[in-house]
Image 1: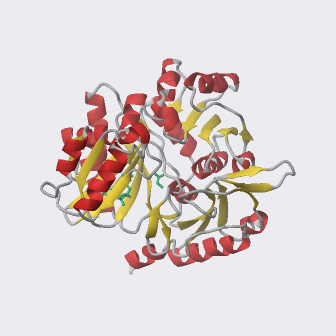
Image 2: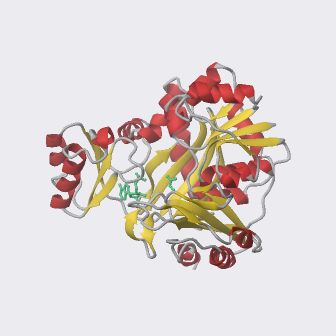
Image 3: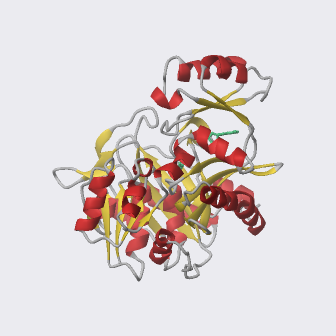
Length: 428
Ligand code: AMP
Ligand code: GLY
């Protein structure tokens, strides 16, 4: 089968790389892709904001299956457009994408379907938001979230009333997140380790693809501002069979049933971001796509049959099972540009990519890279590469990943030195 992957980051490189190895895949196209995806298939230009343009590309190229990387094309209705045209696609409808794209919608959905999550209030005006952060309902710290997509920066954990009020005013008065912050979700602050679980859905049932733990803060020891993710390991040692059964029953099942009841069955990836609290797992948020960098950590662990599984999810009636994988684990370290996450530089020449790829048990995925007019691979964004190490233990996977990292250099390169450390602590 011929597969089209939409997007151009590390997640898409990992998806394309995994699909290219599948026995049922003849060719992988990525649109727009990056220099990493160009090495495993063919890159094609596309306007990701236009569902019609994407459909036209898939028809012209006789694509059998389209896999959507980022959420934005889903929010714009690319899956609706494909389904109306009878073309298989992995991803939910535009309405289904609201589970990620509107936090207020997601919280209301969870409340309606009794899915465990933090207590919350949805506020549409300044007065109600200021009242919600007074401490009366949720105490402190309190969490202030922009309703819409804010590039991972829309969440403030406010230690006291003054901080919470400042976050409310920044969003609602100063419009720091534009229209995404016109509505706020205020919620109680949960505590516990965070685990991400990934499922593939076909409208009725879900297949567990794996688990991972992200590292959102920029600096070692989880310090500094939040980023899109500075590294991940997989699977999470905290994701016991018992926990996964609990998540399937209390969270994923109700998501599927709720969408069916609403007349809009849920298809595609479901990324459940969990906090393991003393009262059991609670949902921090849902995403309607795979995570980045979690995909880079999870893809190397999937066995053959992934493409068929994706096709089943698009067609309904998940029946394929992945061929058993071995028990390896992975650690993926993100290499970022100077200034990230506040700003980022571009155009710095990246050295050592081939040397890193030659290190045993190491795979290098491209995120923000491009080929310059002299044929060199240069940086092109905040998160540049994810170097993934694999092995039978987290010690081995970590040392492989960092041996790979040591081979690579570019001006201003920054990365965390402690990715995977948490897995070692969780096991001991
Ligand atoms: P989100 O964009 O919703 O994933 O939130 C970003 C990060 O904020 C999460 O990864 C959590 O670390 C933190 N967070 C979000 N909601 C809560 C909450 N209710 N309690 C504690 N931490 C939270
Ligand atoms: N790594 C977090 C995300 O993909 O949303």
